[in-house]
Amino acid sequence: MKVNFMKNFILNLSKKQILDSGLAIVLILLLLTIFYNNVIYLYIAIIALLTCMICPGVYKLFAVLWFGFSYHLGKFVSFKKVIRF
Image 1 (cartoon, rainbow, N blue to C red):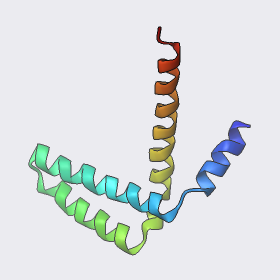
Image 2 (tube, rainbow, N blue to C red; image 1 turned 45 degrees about the vertical axis):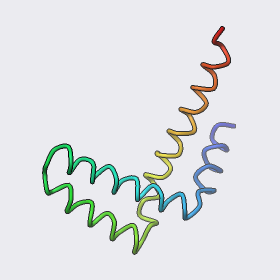
Image 3 (tube, rainbow, N blue to C red; image 1 turned 30 degrees about the horizontal axis):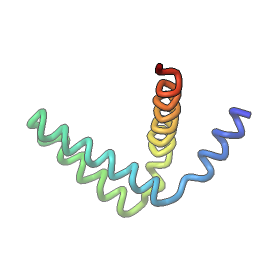
Image 4 (cartoon, one colour; image 1 turned 180 degrees about the vertical axis):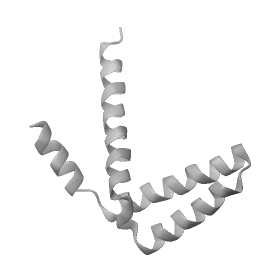
Protein backbone atom coordinates (compact mmCIF):
# COMPACT_ATOMS: atom_id res chain seq x y z
CA MET A 1 0.00 0.00 0.00
CA LYS A 2 2.74 2.47 0.98
CA VAL A 3 4.80 1.58 -2.10
CA ASN A 4 1.84 2.19 -4.40
CA PHE A 5 1.21 5.56 -2.77
CA MET A 6 4.82 6.68 -3.28
CA LYS A 7 4.85 5.33 -6.84
CA ASN A 8 1.67 7.28 -7.68
CA PHE A 9 3.01 10.35 -5.88
CA ILE A 10 6.21 10.33 -7.93
CA LEU A 11 4.41 9.70 -11.23
CA ASN A 12 1.74 12.35 -10.62
CA LEU A 13 4.08 15.30 -10.15
CA SER A 14 3.19 17.98 -12.65
CA LYS A 15 5.70 20.09 -14.55
CA LYS A 16 4.54 23.11 -12.58
CA GLN A 17 5.36 21.37 -9.28
CA ILE A 18 8.80 20.45 -10.56
CA LEU A 19 9.36 24.02 -11.76
CA ASP A 20 8.22 25.39 -8.40
CA SER A 21 10.71 23.12 -6.66
CA GLY A 22 13.51 24.44 -8.83
CA LEU A 23 12.48 27.99 -8.03
CA ALA A 24 12.47 27.10 -4.33
CA ILE A 25 16.11 26.05 -4.69
CA VAL A 26 16.88 29.38 -6.35
CA LEU A 27 15.15 31.26 -3.52
CA ILE A 28 17.09 29.30 -0.88
CA LEU A 29 20.36 30.06 -2.66
CA LEU A 30 19.51 33.76 -2.90
CA LEU A 31 18.72 33.85 0.81
CA LEU A 32 22.05 32.15 1.52
CA THR A 33 23.72 34.88 -0.56
CA ILE A 34 22.13 37.57 1.61
CA PHE A 35 22.71 35.92 4.98
CA TYR A 36 26.28 34.74 4.44
CA ASN A 37 27.30 37.61 2.14
CA ASN A 38 29.03 35.12 -0.16
CA VAL A 39 28.84 35.66 -3.90
CA ILE A 40 29.35 31.98 -4.74
CA TYR A 41 25.73 31.28 -3.74
CA LEU A 42 24.60 33.95 -6.20
CA TYR A 43 26.50 32.27 -9.04
CA ILE A 44 25.03 28.90 -8.12
CA ALA A 45 21.55 30.51 -7.97
CA ILE A 46 21.99 31.93 -11.48
CA ILE A 47 23.04 28.53 -12.81
CA ALA A 48 20.11 26.89 -10.98
CA LEU A 49 17.69 29.44 -12.44
CA LEU A 50 18.97 28.90 -15.98
CA THR A 51 18.72 25.15 -15.49
CA CYS A 52 15.18 25.59 -14.19
CA MET A 53 14.22 27.62 -17.25
CA ILE A 54 15.90 25.35 -19.81
CA CYS A 55 15.38 21.88 -18.38
CA PRO A 56 13.14 21.75 -15.29
CA GLY A 57 13.09 17.95 -15.30
CA VAL A 58 16.47 18.02 -13.57
CA TYR A 59 14.70 18.99 -10.34
CA LYS A 60 12.31 16.02 -10.26
CA LEU A 61 14.15 14.29 -7.41
CA PHE A 62 14.13 17.47 -5.35
CA ALA A 63 10.42 17.92 -6.14
CA VAL A 64 9.67 14.44 -4.84
CA LEU A 65 11.57 15.20 -1.62
CA TRP A 66 10.08 18.68 -1.28
CA PHE A 67 6.44 17.74 -1.83
CA GLY A 68 6.84 14.44 0.02
CA PHE A 69 8.16 16.31 3.04
CA SER A 70 5.31 18.82 2.86
CA TYR A 71 2.75 16.02 2.57
CA HIS A 72 4.09 14.17 5.61
CA LEU A 73 4.47 17.38 7.59
CA GLY A 74 0.83 18.22 6.84
CA LYS A 75 -0.26 14.75 7.97
CA PHE A 76 1.74 15.11 11.18
CA VAL A 77 0.33 18.56 11.98
CA SER A 78 -3.22 17.38 11.26
CA PHE A 79 -2.70 14.39 13.55
CA LYS A 80 -1.40 16.66 16.32
CA LYS A 81 -4.55 18.81 16.00
CA VAL A 82 -6.78 15.76 16.30
CA ILE A 83 -5.22 14.47 19.50
CA ARG A 84 -5.08 17.90 21.17
CA PHE A 85 -7.65 18.35 23.93
